[in-house]
Image (tube, rainbow, N blue to C red; front, side, top):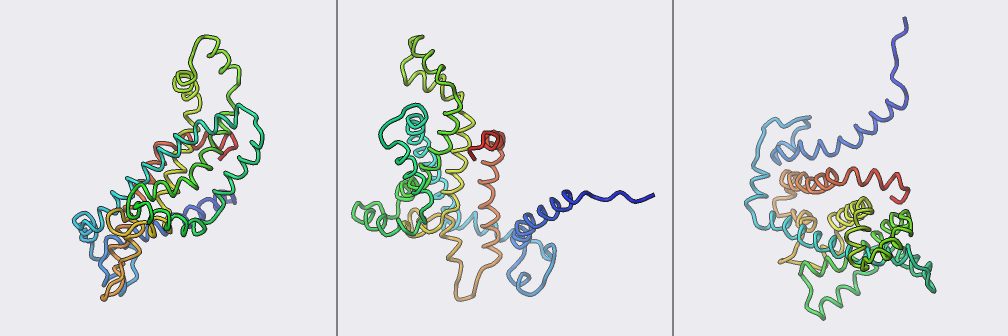
Length: 270
């Protein structure tokens, strides 16, 4: 009898999973080791297991405040992006006006522009207005990229809702705010979840603007992680622990919106 063989698709999937998980595992592995062990030996698991790297992060304000600052401006950006994108997406999906396609295309071009292009204008503007080194500065800067993405995603979900629902609600005496909040929003909650996820992820991992527009009071964790070089060299162990903790918020968000993301792919808008 011939031995059963794994299908080529299964082998490819296993190879891909190994390739994707290996860097994460190696970072977690390094986070439980000392710098001396990291630089001196090659091991698949810690030879001298230690929690000191995580203790450093949770006891040093320079580290744990980076996570607090990041969560503040990411939450601000996500809420503002969705609040601005909802009425804009509704207008694009329900109405036709002069230049609507051009405006929609212009929004998408902002999302495709590198952040470095907007860096100097934001820096000069925020310096003049006194917004430098504030959470709101980064949150507002990220709107340039997240609002177009949220509008694009939400417009696709809203276009899939029949217009007859709007007309029926108006006939029944619903005002627009009441209709939008209590009838229309529940119908597109999957789209809201998908848009919020992508806004969160971009704002959480973006480095250039977050690092340039902050210095001390609002310095995010992505900026803190780039400043671990000292006279003693790179603190690889603490940096690995910080990187491991940085993955946690994204993983939590993915867990809560996983079903919404699947629906977004099914609708062909994500």
